[in-house]
Length: 214
Image (cartoon, rainbow, N blue to C red; front, top):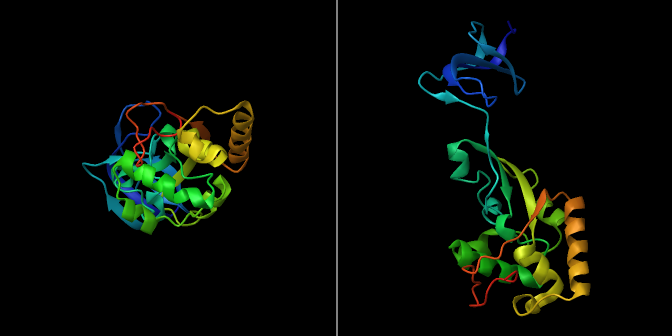
């Protein structure tokens, strides 16, 4: 039995993520950590009655496009409303970093077309104005209400960073591919979790051309 806990979640249906059957239990939390799960009877600074509710670990959303939205919505709504506590951004190759400062607006407009988001909202809400993945992550550090892992996207940011507007017009040369590889390696060193891409023909940029990786 634990000593006095800060928070006791009482009587919920616990689904602990291990594959064990759901069970009715109390969850005791002290100093931000779960210290005991079971039928508990102890003093607590705060008690939540979870009868009729599920008590689960946070969910991980491995495919999101919150790269822009997190700049003005640190809760990543509506994902967090449904129990998501960790998310991976930059899927399908859609990232806005690494980027030259002159390319950020182009990437945001492309994102507005493909993702059906307001171009005005993106221009107003995104603080990132160019730089590396490290710069992008630094701009979000300490500002988020969820855990976030960022992918680096070939789709647009990496290709356009190396090839400029030609990224939407032609295949890359061997030297350009080497330069893109170097950018991805740097992004991984800077904290990117992975590399993403896509070649869906239905993805068209705001200028009417296929997105760069197509």
